[in-house]
Length: 112
Image 1 (spheres, rainbow, N blue to C red):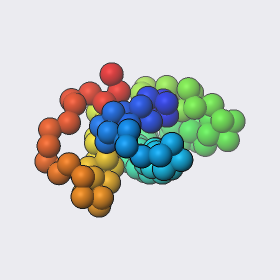
Image 2 (image 1 turned 180 degrees about the vertical axis):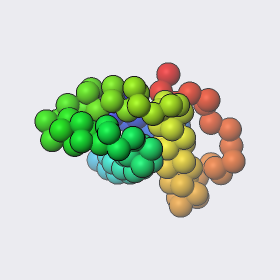
Image 3 (image 1 turned 135 degrees about the vertical axis):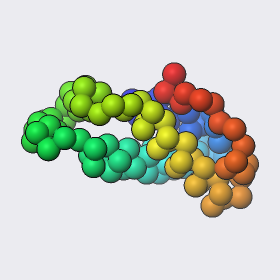
């Protein structure tokens, strides 16, 4: 769940080259934040109760690698959930902005 990878995928999939650098950064930052929130909501609801205390501890310590490992170890198909959150958020943005319709096939693995 590397934010740099997410930012890169947003840029690739939305083709933001025509935007001014400031506008491009704003779109990428906002979408990255939304994607991260969507992932957190989806994943936390699936996290077993016995792992939630460890999650809070890792989050407070700012240990994002530890959080990802905790999720990977405790949530089946974690990568699939992440990919679906990325795709869903980008599709919602496309729909809102009148860009390429969301039913256009996207790359199968957005974290590759």
